Image 1 (cartoon, one colour):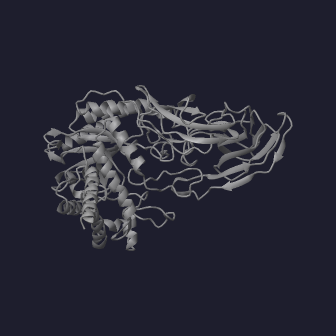
Image 2 (cartoon, one colour):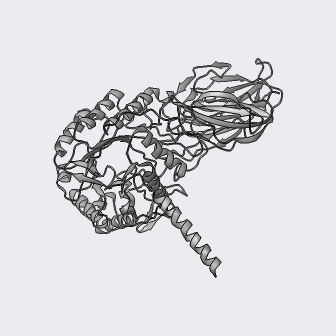
Image 3 (spheres, rainbow, N blue to C red):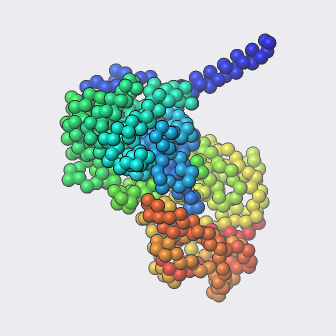
Length: 611
């Protein structure tokens, strides 16, 4: 009997230690209020940071052949997101809302609220992971309970469950009770990772009544009071949608924080609005700028200066997208308020964001994030090693990147233990979207191993894990059509399209042409197969594919077409199709000719690897 008892004690000890490790936190205090200031212990708490809309639910999994853009973030993605905020100097981020099942959701879409009183455990276990990571990183969260808009489900969906209209959400007793049931479930939930109730978790800065909601004062009073009856530790922020503070919110006893959002269209600059709102809130309540963006860097810098120099507690730029578990980043263009120019930011920025001054703006965010806390700006640390994903094809090498990395170095060896040769430097993970970051186009035939290092101005990381052996018989020319430098010749009026990226499933650069325009490629050995990714802004018109041995006389070959169109959706997706030609022999020239308006996002031409 002694041995089973010993084993049980050991098991319980292990489980207790795992729970203790999970609850480890860098945060010692709840955020409180003193007058019009937020306080961390006895010190004022102020911040500059960015919103992370995908932190609880990813809406941007828009790979070319993906049928559902929605998925829950995994642990790598969550850690990358919050690690990025910390690296930028942020101590706070704001998530998007607790999502609600929509009647038009694709099958398999994960949502938090499935029906009144019915909740998706997998989605809330993801929130458990987010809160655990927030404690480890020291980044606090602002979490809105409900959305005014349809993107992730909100008040209209709560109303729809009961056959009501979205405006009934503010007054109908049944709908208010349903919403309060969600609030109770959240506040009383015990985190499966940390063992803490959400209401006892210091990683929550505050609960926000909603995102950009148009709630009447009576509703706000009732909901704020209800939150306070369940959670005496956390602050409540009024999520009323305005660029100017409403007096009723400043007067409500159960509202601790007031907020505004700022986008182009106002008669006043962001800085003027922020200073005016801070003056209104002074002596009454802490004031946070929940979102601001889509103006030039000078105006954004002025807005950050206004936050820093006024009595505002903090502000967050819209918005940051983190790394994708499958390699690279998630992407989100802003065709509406963003004027079809701005995209969500990726730290530390890249040349792909030059049109909206991404790198310079993010560096300004970082300097302001430390300055508002009274701290000097530290050097960006040398990045941690990336994680190389399994390599089965030398033309499709992908990795999970490192926080703060500006570029990567790819290394190849014929043996797992080296010696290693550097085959590529300055590889920017932002230059491809939802595709492998690197193709080893010059790989000789044979058996090869790969590893990757991350780099920034502070230095080069240790190497990643090793992947291989990769048995190589073929090599592939990969053209992402950022320009026409990989094309041997081109005819017609081709243009490189960099706008309307959301419609093209976030492909950031495509070769756009009309009927009769052509691209001709040449590879060093006979073409074995071709793959082309095409978008059709209007009607589908299949390109023609032809091949030649001498570059002069071309013969047309039939292609196989695989359509990836799932409907225009909420973002107006274009029709998209993948074309393939296989089992080719003896011809090293390939020509692609358009038969109608088409945008080509990627061309892959496979040929035998050279000895």
